[in-house]
Length: 267
Image 1: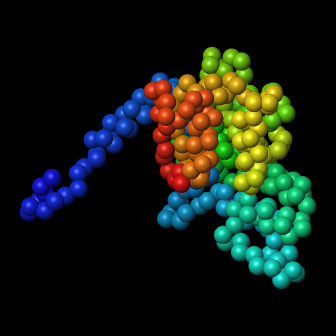
Image 2 (image 1 turned 180 degrees about the vertical axis):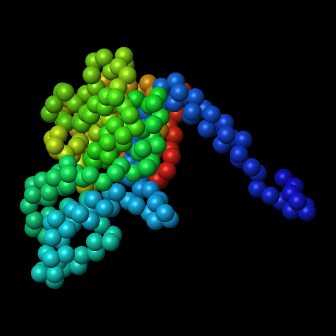
Image 3 (image 1 turned 135 degrees about the vertical axis):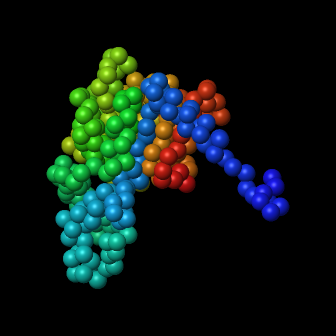
């Protein structure tokens, strides 16, 4: 389109963005949206400095496992600045450390973490029409954010392939309390996913037709609602895998339901 001085300017998409925001906000107000929380939702900016809660946990994890000392004694390379909890665990096990000990240490760190939940989770928790929150993180900062936001009752569920109690309650649709569902497990509530191998195993169990503990009521709730991905950084195959699992139908048949993506990336 012509612009000032005869130059061409890019078209404005503000109208479309405003419309999309109105659609999303209306769907949230009507209770038709389920947020899917990823690791990037644990990042915030405070006084111009980036705070990444997942990275802080990874650094604590590495210190508790004495990764720097192990590397020094064995002549191995260790770069704490680029580590996640997954890389810490994978490296520790590859260096001969007992896997069970690593999970125990990480579980203890999560249980005793008293750092304030990141602001993105606080803001999300104040949106009262949102009732069901599905998180792919294993920490409890989302639950703590909901409590801090004044939610009177917060129920936590975590997927466990061997336990039928890991599904939503039978009367979930009629209840008003907030529910946080840890799709990849939670410390203190059975096995939880840290590494890519863990995530793959959880996904296999969730989709397996022979699994006796598939959370059918959870999937029924996801199938009927719009999904809002917040701070998720999934590889493309995992995103498609998750959507196919949640929707219960081919990806080319959205059945009038939307998938929103906010923050982070879906690669």
